[in-house]
Length: 387
Ligand code: GLA
Image (cartoon, rainbow, N blue to C red; front, top):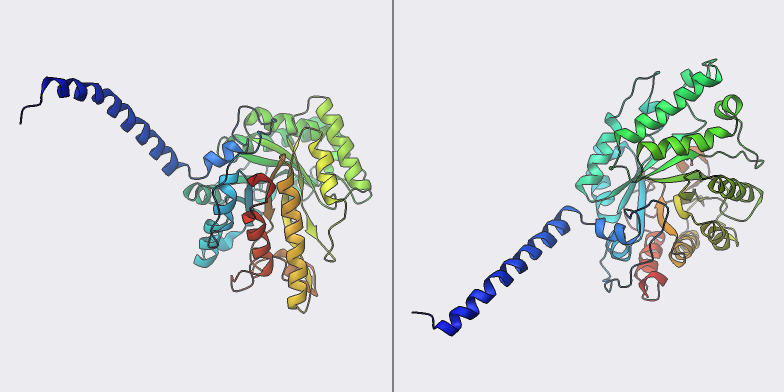
C-alpha cells in the first residue's frame, strides 16, 4: 500500500530518531553486560577521576527482595562487600559459586604476598595472582591487592645483608613490577601492611632497620607511579578503637598526607577477638575519614569461643551488623571485606585453639546469623546509604 506524502514525511523524521534510540540502547546494553558492577563502583568513587576524592553516595538503591545476595544488595548502593579467597577457589565448586554470588570484591588471601610474587630475587611469579584476577573479571568483581610491603618476607630479603641503596632498589622493583603487572586490573592495594608494632611505634622490620621510616612514603610514591588510578591503602590490626596504636597511625597518615604522600585509604583489619568491638569503633573510623582518606574494613572476622551455641552466634551476628552499619554511615567507608567467608576455610581454626566459627557461612556453606545480619543491614530501608 502506498504511503501518503504526509505520513512519509513523518516516517523520514522518525528514522534518525529511531537510529539514535537503537544506538543508545546498544551502548547501554553492552555496558551493563560487560561491567555488571562497575557502574556502582564508579558511583562509589572507585573509578573516578582521582583516587583520593570519595564521591558522594548514590541517591537511589532499588528496593531489596529477601532472596538477594549480599552483592545484589550492596552494588546498586555503591557499597563494596568482599571476601578474601584462597586456592580452594580452584577445586571446590561450592566455594567458587558462593564467592561469585555473594561478593562484588575479592582479596586474594596470600598469592599477592611477597613470598609468592617474588620468591627469588628478581624472579616474578604472577601466575597465581592472575588466576584470581581472571576469576574476578569473569564475575564482575573488583580485586583488592594484599599486600606489597610487609614484614613477613622470604628469607632472601631478610638475610640479604644489602646496603641501603641495594635494599631500596629491591623494594622499588618489587612494588613497581607488581603494581604495573596488574595496572588497571587490581583496583586497590594494601601498599603497606602492619607498619606498627604492638607498642604503637613503627614496627621493627628489615625495612625500618635498613631504610628508616621513609620506606613507607617511598612505597606509596612508587605504587602511585606504577598505577596512578589504583587506590592505595595502609592497613593494620588492633586499630579498630581509639587507642595508642590507632593514635599513632592517625598521626602517621596525617603527617604523610601533609607531605604529599599518596595514601588514599586506611584499612582496618578488624579481626575481632573476645567477641567485643571497641565502643569507639565508629568514631575512630570517622576521625580517619575526616583526614580526607577512605576507610575500609579489610579482614573482618569474629571468632567465637567453642563450643558454638546459638546465643554466641547471635552475639557474633550483632558485631557483624555493627561493623557494617558503622561503615554504611560513613560516605568515606569504601567496603567491608571478610577474611574468608566460610568456617570450612578460616585462619582462625588454625591459629586460635578453642575458638572458631568466625565467618558468615558455616562449614557446610549454610548462612549463619552473621550472614543474615549483613544481609538485613544492607537491605534495611533505613540503611543510611539507601536514603
Ligand atoms: C594478617 C595479614 C593477613 C593474614 C592474616 C591471617 O591479618 O594481614 O595477610 O595473614 O593476618 O591469616
